[in-house]
Amino acid sequence: MAINLEKGGRFNLTKKEPSLQKAMIGLGWELKPGVSIDLDASVFMLAKNGKLPADEFFVFYNNLNSPDGAIKHTGDNRTGVGEGDDEMILVNLSKVDASIDEVLILVSIHEAIIKNHHFGLLEEAYIRLVNVDTKKEIIRYNLGNNYPHDTEIVFGKLKRNNNEWVFEATGMGSQKGLQEYINAYA
Image 1 (cartoon, helix red, strand yellow):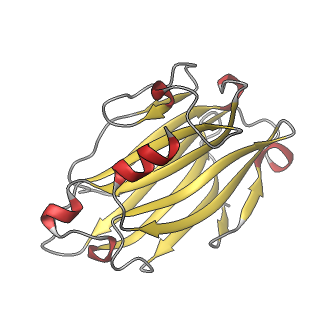
Image 2 (cartoon, rainbow, N blue to C red; image 1 turned 90 degrees about the horizontal axis):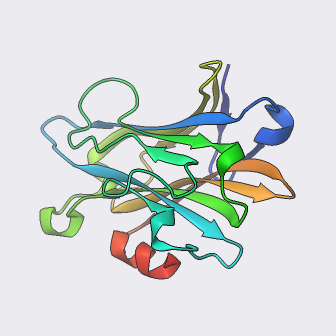
Image 3 (cartoon, one colour; image 1 turned 30 degrees about the vertical axis):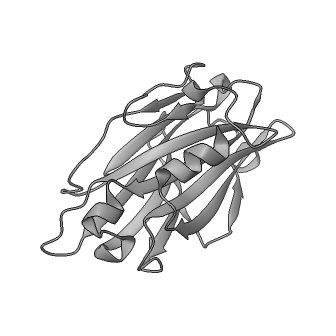
């Protein structure tokens, strides 16, 4: 049974799931009736200084693989229709470049300002982490309906500390646009 985290909750993957090497990060949401929104998952692989070591460490729908081979984005789901995970990111923890201390997972709404879209038009948003080898869901963080005006949400982070990986349920919403995150981490 998966551990359900609350905002700000932390789970030490290395200590509690020592055999975990390959993980699937599933991001899901349901659209309110009559709504059509394109959400995009992005991953920022950050060094100790809080920056991308190179542009290629920003993984998203136009750059599906990190240069170290550790992160693979499985592609853009433009409708969010259907059951289960809407977008998935595969992570091989043993391959993450030694210079990377944090893997930040952000979901943004494509053309949110132009189309007047926001997370208030969604229901049941979540992030979950699954052991690829055992298919066991390890953790789940349900975001609920706490972001009625936000256009981006940092769903969570994988943080490396003393060779241990910890997942942190972040749940930080904003209205600044994906480009501002890119500017901040580049």
